[in-house]
Amino acid sequence: MSLMQTTHTLTGAPAPADMRAALANFATGVAVISTLDPQGKPFGMTVNSFNSVSLDPPLVLWSIGLRAHSLAIWRAAGGFVVNILAADQENLCRQFSSRVDDRFAGVDWTAGRDGLPLLAGTVAAFECRTWARYPGGDHEIIVGEVLACHRNDQLPLVYCQGRLGTVQKPD
Ligand SMILES: Cc1cc2nc3c(=O)[nH]c(=O)nc-3n(C[C@H](O)[C@H](O)[C@H](O)COP(=O)(O)O)c2cc1C
Image 1 (cartoon, protein in one colour):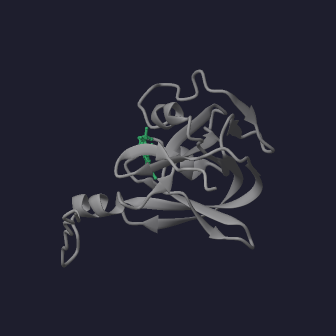
Image 2 (tube, protein in one colour):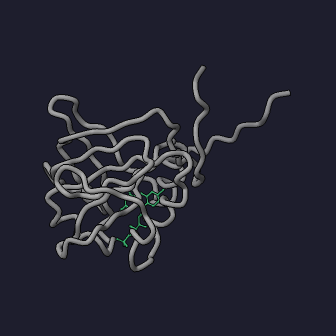
């Protein structure tokens, strides 16, 4: 028995809700971008807009919504760390996208090479210097030059169709 498949096709420029719904089918990892605010306090934010750009030089990107309260912190930041969450770090995904006063409360971290916060227990981390910022519609694209990277062989947290999950370990 075959399952009925429904394909929604839209012509013309899609409305934001249609864009969001179609993009939700693109499975991504989940990252917490961390830095120090102008007062030197650790600050971080959950994103899934992270992606690779270049291997030589090593560059990565992520984008921030222009309406984010923390936009000024990211524009002022000379550097940041991309912390790629592990499958068991759903709680960090939620904490770093929430409106709590201190998103670092109770979070285990160490200072990286330039003093920026490296979260404990992640599957990978990229310590970056802010390399460029570009306009991107209702977001701003932030490109980082990777100065150091870390990885282990745990499974990553995955975000797809509005849900958090993980992948199966390949044989
Ligand atoms: C899975 C997930 C992915 C997200 N990705 C992004 C992103 O790529 N860019 C962004 O600006 N906000 C993203 N957000 C929202 C932010 O984490 C945050 O909640 C929002 O920007 C509020 O931050 P503010 O306190 O600076 O306003 C994401 C949230 C979740 C849960």
